[in-house]
Amino acid sequence: MRALGSAEQMTAVLRAAALAGINHLETAPAYGPAERFLGEAISTLRQQGLTPPGDWVITSKLLPGLELAHGQRQLIAILKRLGLERLDNLAVHGINCAEHLAWAVHGDGSALLDWATTNGLVEQVGFSSHGSQQLIHAAIDAKRFDFCCLHLHLLDPQRLPIAAKARQAGMGVLAISPADKGGRLQSPSTTLIEDCHPIAPLKLAYRYLLAAGITTLTVGAATASDLDLAAELAEAAGPLDTHEQAALDRLHQQRRQRLGDDLCQQCRACLPCPQSVPIPELLNLRNLTIGHDLIGFTQERYNLIGQAGHWWESVNASSCNRCGDCLPRCPHNLAIPDLLKDTHQRLQAAPRRRLWG
Image 1: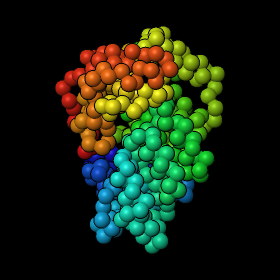
Image 2 (image 1 turned 90 degrees about the horizontal axis):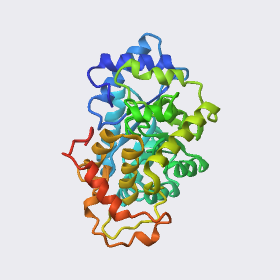
Image 3 (image 1 turned 60 degrees about the vertical axis):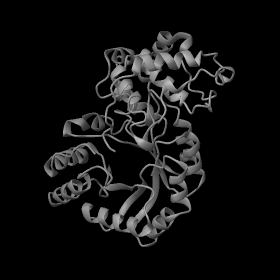
Image 4 (image 1 turned 135 degrees about the vertical axis):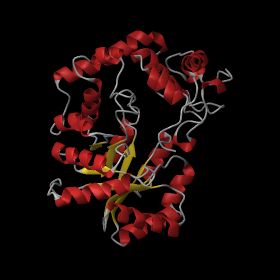
């Protein structure tokens, strides 16, 4: 979704990917010319004899809500752009609300997924989600999908238990944007670098997820050099070593020290909020702001609220009316209305446009 300057740029990235031991390409029609450039790049590299062992594994996605015939045409167009007769993985691109799940399990989406697999156009089907934990649990429990793509991050690991549930159900798990959406770790704050020293924050983030058993990590590469770390970590599965664990422990210790009694533990006991304020998500942004000085990232995420449709939250902290419903439910006795007010004051800024929308 980032190497979109030309087919030549995409070819350079794919060449570096193959040399780094990467074999999985994940794309979508929504990512501008990405599929067309990928198709051209794959063809070029095949002519040069450069493909991963066993060939590329390719995932693309279709947005939910399509009528059956429209979805069929879109899938055929995907295959044509990529130069393929069959897609390894087809994901529903964003099961972010109950209507999306109903479409995929009972509606035209279910018929579309059945048609794609029955006709040999797709090997297996899955979903990505930016939705609630309850919704993701429901999608896994539907037993409709072979894999899922979830936001799994070093600095926000609350979905790791869901990923473990998916793995126990035999599903593949792909981590969406563990670098950029995980705190813009490719360009971390000085504070975060010091917290993770001597391990780079991005390397620690990747190792943390690999050690947790996540099967696939996405790397949003715009240039060949963006894959240097992936090449370094090609054989780096397994538990954290003593140095990595020490860095992780220090990271958590520094966050607790800076936030003190105001640290939100992300237990979610405060929910539901009568005003639909996403309390844990907002207080996690506050955690990252104060805990690791990630103000650029957290301001951007906070000011996307209400600007990105169903892809991100729609209610910010200013909607808290201090009703106090959350207070007795918080096991850590946080002054939640005060913390939400502080979050809004720290992070409110001019809104910015999300990358895709």
